[in-house]
Image (cartoon, rainbow, N blue to C red; front, side, top):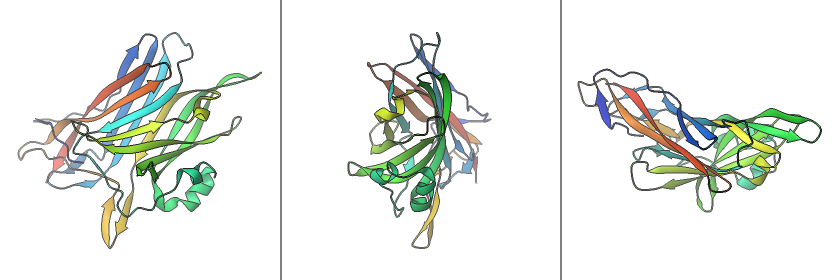
Length: 252
């Protein structure tokens, strides 16, 4: 991931949450890369972190979330060459413990999903599930398959399939996640987090699923850049989105 849209003489952290609002519906968007200090002239392994929350200002139930779209700066690179894959069918049929065992070589990240769940006679409660991300294929394209496993009293396992697409413009890589109906059958998703990071070796060469540099010109300590753009799409046509501007520090 080559980044660097503006240079700074003094780089301060800009890792804050962005917000968007439509009526009573509000989205919170977070994201960053780690480490912040990166080589000036070559790429290094990084962790790409994305997340967010969905709330309503009047505490009403929001519309069902149907898609999560995460777009990364056009110089970004998610490298999966040589990585094993795990299939959507398999992840839909096994537990998270089984997925860790049988698809461990395809794992590329982790996170969590929090839902507001409604059960007859039990009222509403928050349910948090672990998320495991795997390298996969969807419709013949590269994909990140995020298996979510919620805990009692409503144990569920489902997969959010993020199709990875190349596109033109500032943000050249898009992860388009479609939520299955079961994800909102008993309530609604209120928050999620996803961290993508995987180092591996191919033919004796070290590789990273996500990598980045901080190509600030010589004499400048860092750069400010549009790191990512995120959008939530809901049933009924509502959508929320934001652009995340971040910075990096250059070494070398």
